[in-house]
Amino acid sequence: MPKSSLKVTKNQMFGFTLVELAIVTIIVGFLLSMFLLPLSSQLELKARTETQALLIQAQEVLIGYAVVNRHLPCPDTDAIPDGIQNRNAVGTCVSDEGVLPWNTLGIERVDAWNHYFKYRVDATFSHSVNLFTIANAETSTGIQINGEAGALVSTNSRPAAVVLSHGANGFGAITTIQASPANRMPAPTGADELENTNANTTFISRAPTAAGSANEFDDMLTWISPKLLVNRMIVSERLP
Image (cartoon, rainbow, N blue to C red; front, side, top):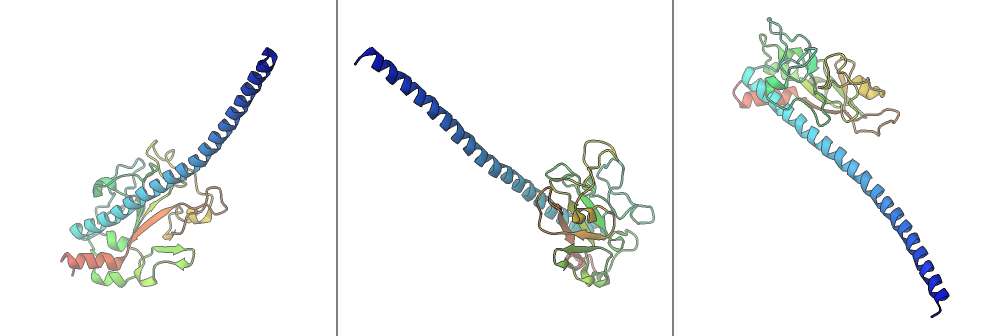
């Protein structure tokens, strides 16, 4: 084979290899982008699953606390939360809403996103002097939980207490980083998340919506039914 012919063949082979390399690079980049999105989704799912388990744990431990003490604990209302409930000498709570008192309960202090759990309790069930009775299982508390289809809890069985995680975006949550008020995350932009931060007795629990959407929502809630609480008390022979 002539030298000139061999030279052309080598150049053609070298050029084809560069094209192949470019194509492979594009394909690898595309595959990586395909894998990154599912990984992000998996991490988000893992965080929500972990937080849901912590919410269930909080619900059970709150009921256990009530069985032992005949009342629910008060929230932690300190500017820098220490996990210890804040109660007045007369038996009432300093405030009905605050941070879940994790030290008092002996459980985890934060959700999967490192935000404290919000805790709201009805005064009837948290009073440590005027203890609640069986009749209170049928007495409406002031707490109401609404969803996309309206009220989730019937009028006569509104929650005795609510525990809430502010989700991945953390809007309205209290973090562990700095002292109050600098430790509070930005206020929510969506109406439903805003309802969960306005310190009233109405809460929203519904399916999450995408970040940046018109009514962004990723809060997670659990609550204690008065009937369930009273039933546990009766089974444990703490009532009547």
